[in-house]
Image (cartoon, rainbow, N blue to C red):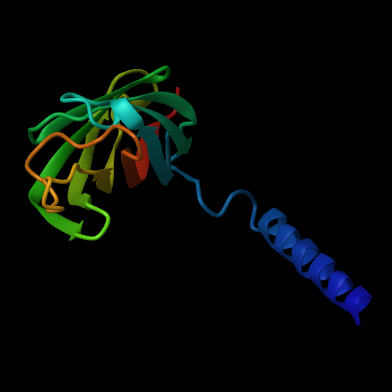
Length: 179
């Protein structure tokens, strides 16, 4: 029975690989008009501890998809954001109002903050010159706070660095010009 499951798994994997090969290329990135490439792009990164609680945090990120590279996200207020990478700058413009969610656990004195925002990719430099497409990103922060002598959580003070997390995730359908 175990051998039969392994054979079916191998057969399914071979069938999936054959479907991708017969489709004439990647199903996720398709060339248009011979000059542009459209496909998914994911930008993600996480920092912990003191870096997560910084007043102006910087998150090292990895970009995977149409353009594969590394860069940084500078967490700043505003509608226009620039993500500098090794392949060039990626420009992101916020659209509409962000969705903000906060939670607090009064037993552990842990608070979380999540910001979700719809955005547009509006060009850039290098590999991102002329890039465009819809996007959305999420910023997540979680930290533990001190207690008063009476055992009440002090959420208005600076959080502890131990256990703090700040993560960033951007997903987009990116169209870039080929070089």
